[in-house]
Image: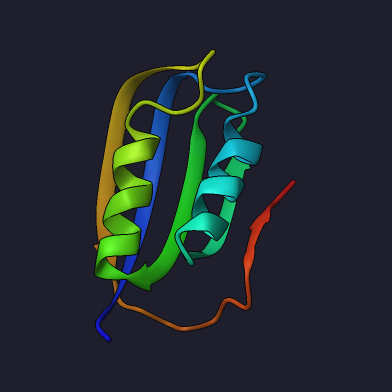
Length: 92
């Protein structure tokens, strides 16, 4: 099973629209471990690790987000897998 780690920044109407909580639900549904948090500049930051197809599923979802959100910019980078996460959490 090949693992992949992604680091995403999402810009747009992504705070105050349940983006973080919805990301957590989608991550858990896809067996992705990591975290999501709001940034002071209005973006949402996501780090996730999991099997390639599970990561792809989460990545595609993050490009549109939940119903009331609007994604204007989507930045994705791949990083080395660290296997440091036990689960997926919302960070504050």
